Length: 571
Image (cartoon, rainbow, N blue to C red; front, side, top):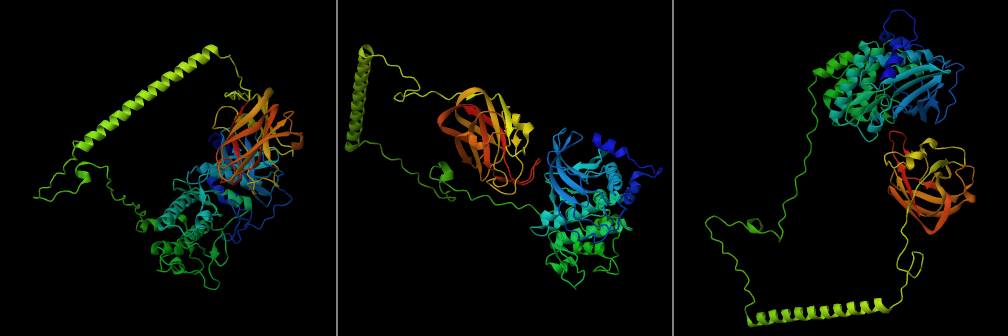
């Protein structure tokens, strides 16, 4: 967090000795909030809630692969709005995913965004997604924040139904406590909606965009505590009912029927917890409305925290245990476990063992079997001795004949030998590389490192979005190539790879000028490609034309994509 601390302390604001945290509302005071709970944009930027025009400033013309401060590599633009853009990026110094907000330095909100980011960084509360850096350089202002690949937005959770009652209770408790702590330091959110609330894989709830999201859109409020409290009430209402507590639809949720007004969650959906339903109404109460049991409304996050503490604690559901399968006895069991237990006072007769072969028929059978065994042993010994004698004669009188591995009539074949890769270059004839600097990771002997493609919306076949992606390998000299083994990072339906013999490492050579060696398809993570006939070449192209669909991970979004971890050639 060294960069966060330095960015947070160096605040370009000469307004006196007033604490930075007291300036949170000022940092978002360049606009008027309008329809603040009805914006429906996705990700971290759900629309502009302010009335201020961004002026003549325009979004910076940046693209995937651009680096900021020679450290933050932009990967995917998730929002482009009102003169600013938000990106998923990679911190190459610490090798982790981060988020970046970008806007021109001459944007009317640039100063406010910097002040809001640095004030938010000073809070340092782990319940908020942390601001890591806030920089003004090269005519750009950018804010770097945490990226949580294992977290899920509340919007996504509600797409499948309302939250379980204990989950809803944990959400409103943790969000209320976090916002109460922020307001005690003079910071407000003003953009608290289902897209700004995340649940991590450990079950913790975190809030992103504190002060910064509102500053990006020029949103302010004369009553920031009231605004955030009402937003928490709307979140709880949505978590209990899977409905948005206003007439308009928002965040993938249906609004309330028109003309009905604000009705309690337990009147919208059966089985809603009564205490949480009343809590949501107390947070949403405004403009003369009253709660169902006449409790006073909650107008600040602090009052909401107090109201939650006065409620009976909602415990998590009991874990469900499945009964073990009934014990099955088998015919192989011995002793008392395999037999019925005797009743008390009753003597059970012991089963008599089968009689030995003592009868005349049994004796005859034993002698017959013994005779057959003796005859078989004698015949086998005689045949073995005869075979050894014939072999000895053929060794003495027969001509000597040596066969090499290439003799078609021989019984031996030349074993395949590994071919050492000397160099590699990414092949991109369309002039659009994937991750050219990472090609060396495909033959470094470390299966945990890889070269990856970008994520594509169509697939598995990449065309027409992309004819293919690949790497040309230099074998050092012309070698006889017979097969290849390629380790893949993603499995699924499906990956198609072709091998081509080419004349150089250059990307300017067309695919039609190359000689196709072989092609293979797999749905697993290991692909074996064998040529019908060995081809002599120095340069070989590994060309991917189809890739499986995979979800979002640390370095890339969901889509059709593939990564190569380990390449080996044999010949």
